[in-house]
Every structure is written in structure tokens, then in C-alpha cells.
Image (cartoon, rainbow, N blue to C red):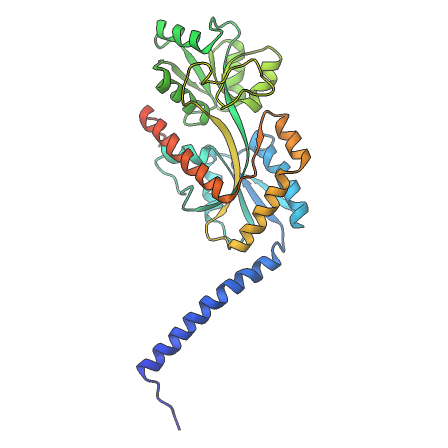
Length: 332
């Protein structure tokens, strides 16, 4: 005898199916995590090989793969201020097999680029910050100023004549100079270059008077006496430069600028898999070899929780939007 399905019975079956789906989803995620990783993991880096971000990615990746038991392949996708890499990572399948080595660019770019195809917070889940390296205000050895106060005094006596180099428009050295302008009222001429190397070379040669440089990159030239540091944009003095004051000590309040990078994964990556990635990353960052390598480059090792990294990102996004808006820095 055929049984007729009533409307109420159909709705009941549908409700049961939905309930079963939600009940099975966590189990499915757990099962995925139990088998993770079952193949090589790709870490996307938005800069060329041998650069600072690439070096960090390879050091951390090599330690993580020992814990995870699968190779971590570094995929260098340079271009567009790292936006090409970020866009590709944001569109990747959220299964734990794509990691993204984010940098300060992911905090600055949303404020200066008008055509981004990703959202730093909405399209990614933060894992942990890997390292930070403060900026240093350096000048050519022939520049008359020996302190930040003297530089400000000189610049105000010669309006528009101060030239500061950067690694490119919209990058952290450029925004650091704009922040310096906001905090001091100093007018300067921005001289953008295609990379930190050419910018530093012209500071050394006296083509430009100075600029903000990441400690990691600037330390060798400073120690060699090839360029003069005026102040570090960190909360405390650097161990490698104990005689160089912080910006606050030099009289510039609320001025902390540091290049940083950190691991992120595409939004939607299952929590159990993210937990495994986070555990592997934090274990890697506690490795004595990593600590020694980073400290030798005037960098501080990260290892914060995902929640702490997210809070840091939110603050960075707010800070650099304020600076970019005030300075009217825009890139189409």
C-alpha cells in the first residue's frame, strides 16, 4: 500500500536532513584534521627569492615541515606591492594546503590602493606573527644633522629641500616618512625607488639625504659606518645600536614603525586544521636556530596567538589608514 507524504512529513524529513548535516560537519572537519597534512603545503610569498620576507618564509617553513611531516613549498609571486600574491592566496581552497606570508603591506595597501581584490581581515584567518623589525631614520654621512632635532631644524630652515628615499610609493618607508611629516610638520621631497637596495645606494652616495630603512636591511651599512642612524622607530633601543635613541627619546611622540610578517590562511579553513598550523608555526618560532637567525638580523621573533595577531592587524589597518588619508597617498 503506497504511503502518501504529507506536507508536514516532508518538512520533517528536510529538518532531519539539515540536522544531520550540521551534526556531521564537525566530524568531517575533525576527520580532515586527523589526516592533515597528507600532501605538500604551499606557502605564497609576495616578494622575490632572497628578499627579507622570502628568507623568513624559508626559515620558518623548514622548521614547520619537520613538525607537520610534509614539505612546505615556497611559491614566490612578486608584483603589485604583494597584492598579486595576496589575491591568489585569498582565492585558494581553504583546506590548509595554502599558507600566505603576509607583511605590513597587507595593513597599508587597503588604505592606498583603490582596486584591491582582497580584504585583509574578511578573506584571511590570522595564524601568528612571525617577526618584526623596526624602521631606522638614517641620513648620508655628509648631511649636517647629527640628531632628529637638528634634522627637523634644518628642514624647517630649508622648506622642501629635504629629500627622503623609499623603496616605492605606498610602501612602509614612504608611509613612515609621511608619518614623520605629520608628527613634526617637516616638508620633504619623496624620492621613490624600485626596491630598498637602490634607495639605500643613493642615500650612501648622497643623491638623497636620507630615509626610513628596516633595521634588518640597514644594520650592515650602519655598523660599517657608511650611513648615520638618527633614531629607531621602536619602543626600546636596539641591542645592536645601544647609542641610537628611540623616536620618543628624540622628541617625536607616538612614532613606532616596524616592518613585520606573519602567517595567514584563506577564510574558511577548518579550525582543527588551523590549530595544527598554528601549533607547528609557534613551535618553529621557538626553535633556538630561528631565534638566533632573527636576532642577528635585528628582528624580534613573533609567535603570538591568532587572536593577538588579529588585534595587531586591526590596529595596523587603522593606523596606516589614518596616515594615508592625512597624507592623501593613493595608488590606482
